[in-house]
Figure 1 (cartoon, rainbow, N blue to C red):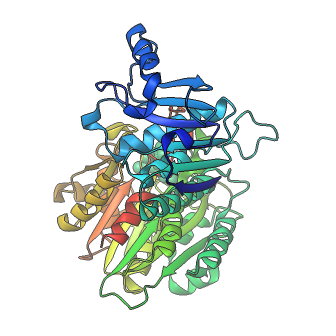
Figure 2: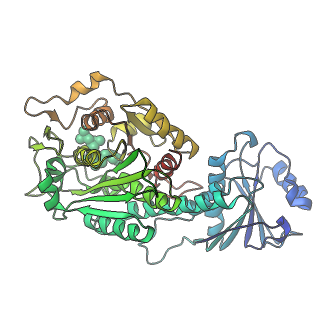
Figure 3: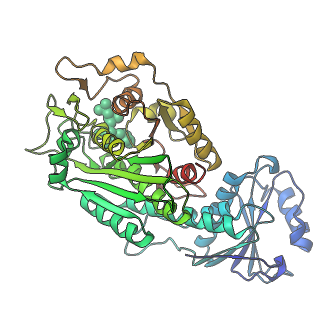
Length: 475
Ligand code: BES
Ligand code: ZN
Ligand code: ZN
């Protein structure tokens, strides 16, 4: 989709539809002039109230150049923020493209052009890439009317990068194995001037990444550790490491998952894909901070070479692990990547992973679960998340939970039992980051939309991308 920012009077905007936000507790906006009587009538008859996500369309609106005037509900004026604007733009795009609109203009009236273009780009995405005939009718062009060029450009980059992540997550595992993900990351790096290095199986053996390799050994698809480096013009004191779980498919291994819903486990690389999308945007926005993304990519399969429950593996950090459950594979690949990130000089770490079903039990589909060994680091991440409208909830990591990971046979067990499962998983990671300020984000409940919403399609959400970019740019 082509995106553009213009400045033009309301009556002169040329488009298939010109969209304007209307609030439930405000009088008709002055821009619509003589059409305000019509809007008041729609409101009093109950056809349109201005609640968030509602849409009202008028063809051949008198006095306007645009072919349609579309009013999108913004809810209450006072609580309408950038997140509300992002959703309003997304809802307008999703509803109007279904009506055949190709060129959509959005009247900003002093609002945030960044949030509007993000919402439009995100709303224009449908997970239908592999349908040979689809009923989704994407927009061809989105025009923001008003707002600053800087905000608009940032929003365009963010929206496109988040969709890049969603495209990766949307690929089924037969079309996206670890090496395919690596190749896509490499091509992206080339396009945006990032350094890319791929550690292959032999290299990881030499290094001693036994935890990662134990997970990978059951698959015919070789693993990869994908490394993407962004370097600012002058080197920074701090070095942010973004580590993302890249399990291209999670059968559970020998501790196999139930068949029902297993197909969804193609999204078990959503954390890795979020880091790839984030650094794609960072490469374009060029903050003054060194940022490196590390994506351990593996496929967790069953077979004669697969790792068994009870196997003991040695991690890159040197600790031994008893693999009590082969389905707790995410933590095994992440610890070797976290250790490697520290050896590469990262002073601060953030990881994102579809790590546990337990986080979905705790927080549902709304909040990311956030864990840390350093409250001020968490504050930075939460501030960035809030500004980007991505919800996070601080989860506990008391010492008592650490006891759950004791093993009589190795330094650690890879599971801590049923209760508090996302906390013992986070503790497992924490055992490998030492004192380095670190935030772990469990995105199992937020990386996939179970149902289409007015502003966003069913399927991959691309959660995390905007937060990580803001974290880097506001560092
Ligand atoms: N990828 C899953 C976690 C998951 C579950 C993500 C549901 C999205 C939706 C992870 O590898 C896993 O299988 N975790 C196990 C851990 C358990 C064996 C301790 C889980 O959550 O059941
Ligand atoms: Zn698993
Ligand atoms: Zn998994």
